[in-house]
Amino acid sequence: MPEGIKNFSDLKRVVEERIKYSGREPVVIVDPANLIANQSCDEQTGLTQLVRDLADLAHEKDLLVIAVFMTNRTAYTSPIELIL
Image (cartoon, rainbow, N blue to C red; front, top):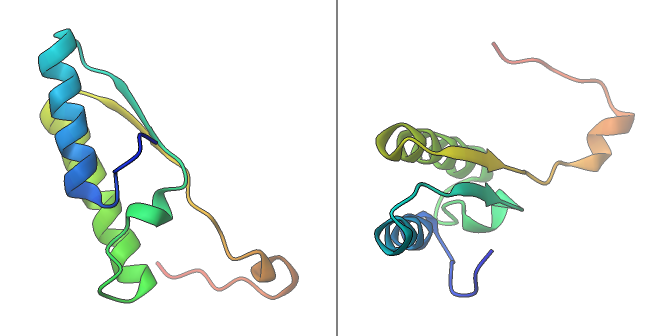
């Protein structure tokens, strides 16, 4: 991720600058996406909002967005609870 991207607003600004500069839509890869999620709320809420923001950006700018999230590896040894 380019230096200076600390939140979704920064990412969106860089994407818009890149489109303006090149005239083409970039492929956006955010790894790890957790680092730009909203830190002012709980983790699940911040990540949920980030996914929505990335989806909105992808639709608005006609982009391919790939987001990689760090997972809680302790969950590998405990039962999984699905929330539907």
